[in-house]
Image (tube, rainbow over all chains, first blue to last red; front, side):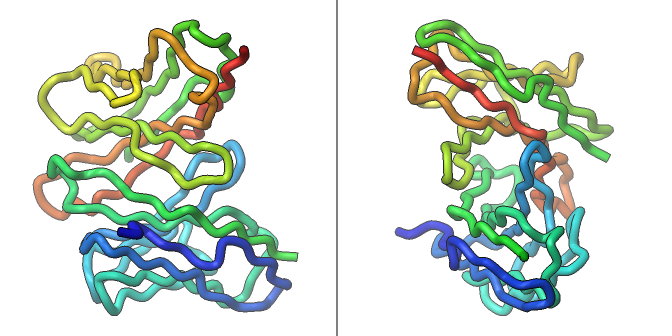
Length: 115
Length: 117
């Protein structure tokens, strides 16, 4: 029972490079989210998905893209890395909001540095 | 739009002393409220939540929080802290809507609890 798995754990990118942050969950959660965490800023929502084939922008989507072809996987794509994207990225999943089981399960994070 | 304010960025406290981490939110609709804890170099873990019913909610490790609708607060308390409670704590709010509820959480800036021996 792995929960939410994120890969890689660490990555250094050069400006302009691209990469995909992987996220997979084995809890059959329909709801999945990508957040970025910057010091003193809390977590900001990048993109989210309420089910396979359905995605939508969060608060800070610029420079990122997502897809949701299966219930389990929710990868985050950085097309042209910029120093402003240096951050820690967290993927999370959840049951339907409002149910007694509602509450995110987070992955362990990906620490990304863009140089 | 919803927002969350954690009033203290750092809270130093001695072991076995009581602690309160403050959280205020603003919202035009009813909300769900959460506290998450993040230990160093780890992801966030759900500590406790208020969805409905009793306004006082408790966690398994001795923390409690009380939903105060009139003051729009959800402060986290523990009567006696341990060294192992040293971590960053995040308050979060999600709007309670009957339809189209996306479950998006708005997080506060975080409060670092530092427990000293």
